[in-house]
Length: 281
Ligand SMILES: NC(=O)c1ccc[n+]([C@@H]2O[C@H](COP(=O)([O-])OP(=O)(O)OC[C@H]3O[C@@H](n4cnc5c(N)ncnc54)[C@H](O)[C@@H]3O)[C@@H](O)[C@H]2O)c1
Image (cartoon, rainbow, N blue to C red; front, side, top):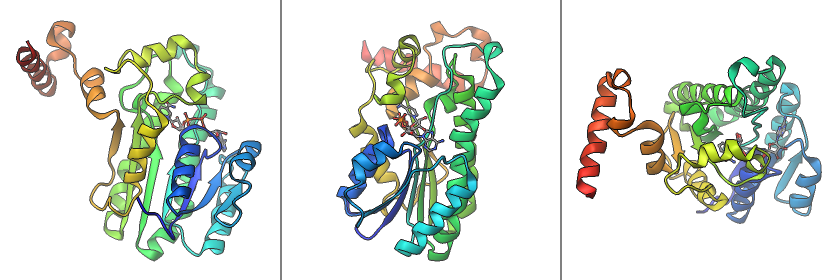
């Protein structure tokens, strides 16, 4: 995919998904504006490309720092075409809701939700002016389905998905698309830092029974923020798509208590699964 002359802002670009997206966009001709609190890694990965990359080693929960970085970058490059919000933390996991510490929950919300709002708030005026923009908020399947043991993370990512739906509608007629990505489990330092039990809980729900790779995530992200994506907005892409639709949202009827099967959609889904199982036999 060709991103020549496009300017992309990426948060969380010092590690994991953000780093992989930044490298791929750079290789595809884009100019980058990278925001991450980890200055050492930003310098190590991109310090030798000052012609193509602007580095902002900032805490993105500080709105005035975010505004300053975006305004400096817009003045430097003249335009901003793409925003990919990758920065995120899980907070404490593998605990039940009554064990959640309010300060930890607030910290997770500040990074996962508030900072995504700050960056979008800062880039949107530039995108509106040029009648073009592609925004991608990296949410999580936890925000769609709710992962036990991850209240703060799941709720903050649900808020990100809510914001995506709102912004998708608000800017749809201005040439700007706003979408979210809800990965299941992609092997990155964030996942490596989680308790093995929590990771197993999540990979058990994926038909492949494994983490996704960075390449699998980046491939989808690049399409979402490309000029080719003209007709999808306010949407939450799931990664991997088909596996999760079945394993997270649908259960064979025999596994679902009848009182949970009463809504029309569950009945349709369980019927589909039964039909699918018959066809497979
Ligand atoms: N890896 C997965 O399996 C997975 C699954 C679903 C969703 N996600 C989401 O994808 C995004 C990227 O995850 P990852 O696995 O690449 O994580 P990661 O830990 O590898 O990278 C996150 C980056 O965010 C940066 N960051 C954290 N707090 C910051 C702050 N206050 N200011 C600036 N930068 C900050 C970190 O320094 C780090 O470089 C996150 O939003 C995460 O919630 C990841």
